[in-house]
Length: 169
Image (cartoon, rainbow, N blue to C red; front, side, top):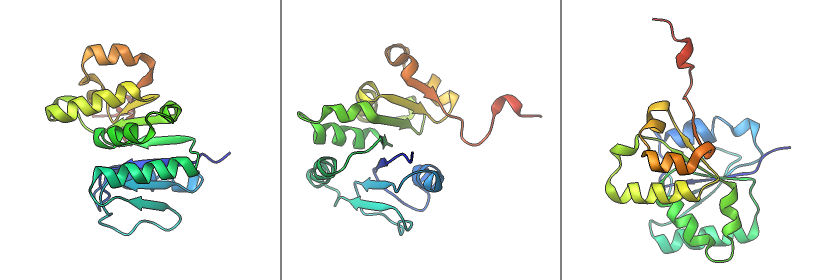
């Protein structure tokens, strides 16, 4: 059956890898997708996608998420930043925390490149998510050992576009 996905973005722009690779890349394989962004998109959202955008305020985005999650049920909620994870948690507390059992968090960079505040947000949401995907093996290995051990099999590396074991030099 088609999977109904909600993707949460900080910002959608022309160079947004999560939007271009994940949302558009899976568009034909999934039920109609819904995207929510903290800021208004910088590009036109592709036809067939439902989108909601905040105005850059936490209050507006939490309100959008609360309303959307009350009206609709999603098979997967894909979160692309620690900021959006924190806002999702704020939106589902205290009565809809079961939503977190359907979340996938994608770490799009190496952990050590994050600012201290973002490390705290990312770590908190990784620990709250059903699955955490790192966008490379080096991104996965950059996650602190204690977090990796707590996540266990809920932590996975996804290699973008090629199999490193099959590269020929």
